[in-house]
Image 1: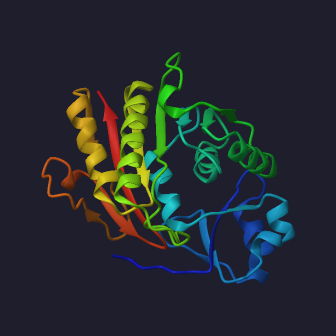
Image 2 (image 1 turned 45 degrees about the horizontal axis):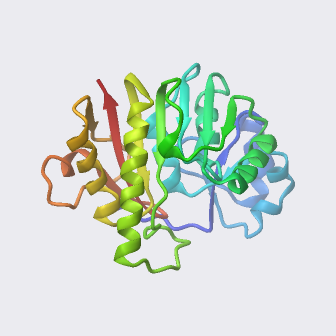
Length: 264
C-alpha cells in the first residue's frame, strides 16, 4: 500500500485561478504537486486555512484519499450528478471542478447545519452548478434520475486520520443498515447506463463488502467494476469471491474503500 502522510493536502479551484497563477501565488507556502492527480498539492504550512488565498477561494483543503472517489466517478461537463450525503462539500465541489461548473449537481445532506457549511464553501469557491437539498437520503425523491451518483456514506470513520472514537459492534451494525438503505435508494435514482460510486473512510467489512453483497442480492440490474487507480490498491477482504475482486481498498493519508457500480 502507498503511504503518503502530509500536514495538509489541497485541491486547486480552477474557477477562481488558473494553474500558472496559482503556483505563483502559492509558492511561498512550499506547495508540492501530487504526481497522480494534477489538481492536488501538499503543503506543510501550518495555517493554510487562514491565508488570503484560501479566503479568495483559490483552493479547497481535502485529504488525498477523499479526492479519489470523484476521480473514479469521473463527472463530465453537462452531467446531472447527485451527491447523496454531501456535507461538508469536498466531493461535490470537486465534481464542479471536473465539470467546469457546467451541468447540475444536487448536493444533498440530512443535516441542515452541515449544509450551511457546504453553502459557505460554494460561495467562497464561486460555484454556480450546485443546488442544495435537505433530505434523508433513504427517501430522496425519485422524480428525476442522474447520470452520476456519489454515495460517500456515513460511516464509523475507522480509517480516518481524524477518528478518535471506538465503535461498538451494535453501532457498526446500525451504520451498515443505514448504508444498505442509502445504496438501494441511490441505485433507484441512477439512470440506465449511469455510474454510482460507493465509498467510505472505514475499514469494517460490515460497512463495505457486506453492503455491496447486499446490493447484489437485491438488484439484478447492476454490475460492479473494479476501479483503475494510479497507485497501489488491494481487493476486498471479506472472503466473498463475487465481491472482493471487484472492489478496492487503498491508503494514502487515510484508508478508503471504493466500489464502482454501473446500472444496466
